[in-house]
Each structure stands twice: as structure tokens, then as C-alpha cells.
Length: 257
Ligand code: NAP
Image 1 (cartoon, rainbow, N blue to C red):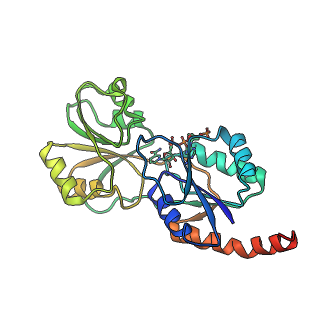
Image 2: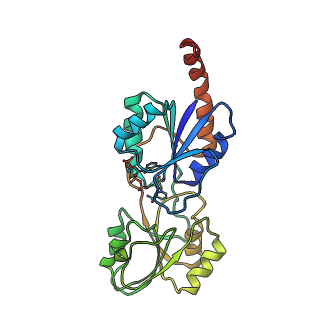
Image 3: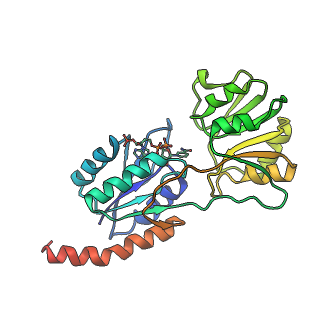
């Protein structure tokens, strides 16, 4: 069964590892092409946009795709909307891996906001040292709060014009370790953390480190995102693909394939 995995996440890579050796499945991983040196899978892959939901529908037909797993990041809302639209138009079953959100626990000092602009406002006006761990796309919002000094961490270098005036940069890819995150925040004199509520283990260490240090966190809530049948992890999505095989095999034998 030919499967499209929409990726760019740990879960997508994990599903590629599970589906790759499964002789019943013929998966292709799709990456948007945002990072300069993406972690490439051992299965077939493609890189770059499809051209909206219509482009995706054309690609699905050309590649004779029979099932889609949307394993994109919780903050990647547009591709998920395109996937639902294209899957519906093409009558292809779609499942989504929806990573559980992080929730505040005892000792957490979170301020919830719904955008990077709101996060910049939530930092207040008193100059502070802020650790910005939101990737590189929304950094320009913090130019509106130039009184703070920032430590920005991202996988690839941000555009210089997006950076607030007092910014130090760390180029690094997760996963991160809690002791190292705590050490980094201590060494840099960090007073506040800004994070997206991405969920998952790979980047949770900074949240635990902020709790241990008693630091406030400005947490950007997830955007609304459409989904197909929802699964929490790659193993469950793999099981869903296997469950489709029975109807897939019946349909193939009825077509005489
Ligand atoms: P987005 O806003 O939902 O998508 C914007 C456009 O990028 C889509 O319309 C599509 O272009 C293309 N695209 C996105 N994901 C794609 C994929 N897996 N394969 C092919 N094309 C894709 O997405 P985004 O927030 O820019 O995120 C881009 C990618 O980075 C996603 O794959 C996501 O999983 C990953 N990622 C995002 C974040 C985040 O915080 N947003 C964090 C970690 C990883 P066309 O319309 O031309 O098809």
C-alpha cells in the first residue's frame, strides 16, 4: 500500500522507521524543506511544497497514494488543512499523529499567550534576559520589545533583519537534556523563557529546567489544526496503516490486481 507521510517531526521519522521495513507498506516521507540539512530517512522521500491542496491532490493521484499520515508539527496548521482537503477530494484515508500538549505542573510559572506578538508583550517593560526557543520564523515579533536581551536558539540561522537588537544566537538541533538546559540558563543569566507548546519529549527539558530554576515561562498555545483519525504516536499510526490493509487487499482483489 502506497503511503504518504507528511513529516518534519520526530514522530514522522519514527513512523518511517516502522513502515520502511514493513513489506506490506510502500511509504514516502515528505518534508517542507525548511531546514538546510534535514535528518533524512532511509525510506524514499521528497522535499518541498506541493502547491496547496490542489497540488497535493494532483501529487497523490500521480503517485497512486492510498493512505496519508499527517505527522506534521502541532504549529504547522496550513499543511494539515491542505492534507484534509486533498484527502477528502481524493477519497484517501487520512490519519493524524497529534502529539499531546504539555500541561503546567506544580512549580510551573506559565503565562499562556496565543501568538509571538502576544508573547513579546507578555515579557513586560522591565529589561530582562530572555531565552527564545520558538524557531526562527516568528522572531521579528520581539523587535517590538527591544529593551530585553535575547538568547535565541534555532536549527538554522535566522534572517538578520528578524532579530531584536540585543541578541545572542545558538545554532543547535534537539533533543536536549535537562541538566544541560539548566546549566545553559544559569550560565547565561536567563530570567524568562519563551516556548511554543510543541509537546513531546525532545524539547521538554527546557520546561523542566525553568521549573527547577523557578523561572517564568511565556508559553505560546497551539493554533487550531484540523486532523483526520487522531493517534498519539507513530506506533499507533503504523497500526492504523496495517488495519487499512485488509480493506485495501479486498479492494485490490475485487479489481483483479
Ligand atoms: P505550514 O505553515 O503548515 O505549511 C506551509 C506550507 O509549507 C504548506 O502549505 C506546504 O506548501 C509546505 N509544507 C509544510 N509541511 C510540508 C511537508 N511536510 N511536506 C511538503 N510541504 C510542506 O508549515 P510550517 O509551520 O511552515 O512547517 C513546515 C514544516 O516544518 C512542517 O513539515 C512541520 O512539520 C515542520 N516543523 C514545523 C514547526 C513549527 O513550529 N511550525 C516546528 C518543527 C517542525 P504547499 O502549500 O506548497 O504544499
